[in-house]
Image (tube, rainbow over all chains, first blue to last red):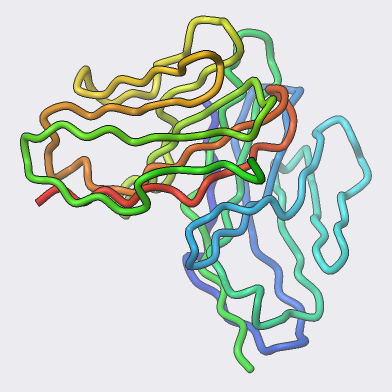
Length: 117
Length: 113
């Protein structure tokens, strides 16, 4: 079974600064995806970024980028030029692509990020 | 529809009553998931539907929980004889294929009193 660990329950950052959220995972699989989801107070989970395990290049989406260290099983999210709208709960998630898997997402406990003006 | 739609948005029920939660996925999406989000347990997988295949019910916490998906579209999660520990936000997600982006609804907040 896979596990996902987010060791930072809460973090805060000043507007326009950079913040990094940590995530580690444990799996024996070799073929999988990793995700960061954002959940604002509206409750709707929004995909921030996705990383395929077979890709060595770190994924980037505008102000969001990841540091994917496959050997260390680490997947951190960097948010540059933080904005007030980035305030939300952030979840790291794992999806196995192995045969027989149901492609479910396994989530970490989340990190509550607050961006201060 | 434009997104995944869940109803009701909030539900308060008395302990012992049955409840039905509805999920209307994005049109054309073949995969549909139910997750439960609670303070103590975080986000937990409940059940997964993919096309016409038998659903994966491995995450359902007890036999009081059941779900169906009619016509490969709308899904209903039913909780019988609700207990206080069933209080949580129930999230539905759908995706075009199993390994593509999952889009989530806004969830149903269930409170059992």
